[in-house]
Image 1 (cartoon, rainbow, N blue to C red):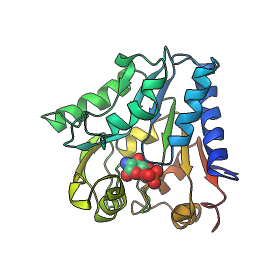
Image 2 (cartoon, rainbow, N blue to C red):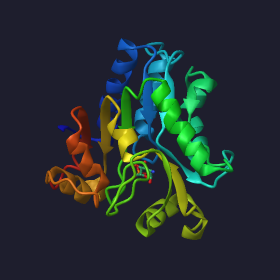
Image 3 (cartoon, rainbow, N blue to C red):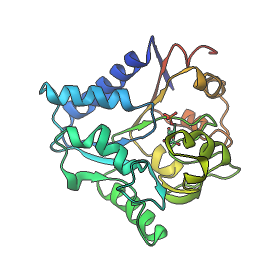
Image 4 (cartoon, rainbow, N blue to C red):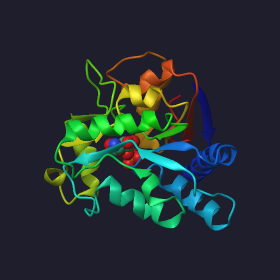
Length: 241
Ligand code: GLP
């Protein structure tokens, strides 16, 4: 696990965007895995800038997002579908048919998850997966548990995640209690992974991860078992390391 500490959130966003841009420049048909949450917003802003100043072309890129609430309408401003269009897809030249998110409005979540997993495999797997992290160590919506799921699946959100994500909704009661998420196996099969950790509220979980122990109670700790993970932290998140 490689660790890069940049000074500020903006610095982390730039380093992350540059890493992703390098993958795309070296492989125009790259398959990229994307994340939501407040952490990657600055990185997406940079990528939009690179596209606008004509140094980055997304026309052949395929994207798969990590997760989506369930059930939720794509048109709901709190959906990850809406988030991704607002922060990235509406501003770059990625083809709509190459944009993939688990469908929060599907009727059969099991079938949706199986099809999502199959499509990632058929495309040859993810070249670079961007991750944020929950305060409790979750990645995607793989919550701390005694057992973790391998493949894309329907999951229940933990109380702490519902509380943490309530800031985006009018109240905690509005937060969907379930989500569709790539599994730990889906994430671990990505050829490379960039984990973004920023802000002082993530310092404690960053410290836990860098203790080096692997436990399903901190799903992000499983990333120690992957050969090509870069963790990008700002100084606030790295304060306890
Ligand atoms: C959500 C997402 C995660 C994300 C996490 C942290 O629960 N499912 O993918 O990493 O929030 O969000 P933030 O970056 O806003 O702290």
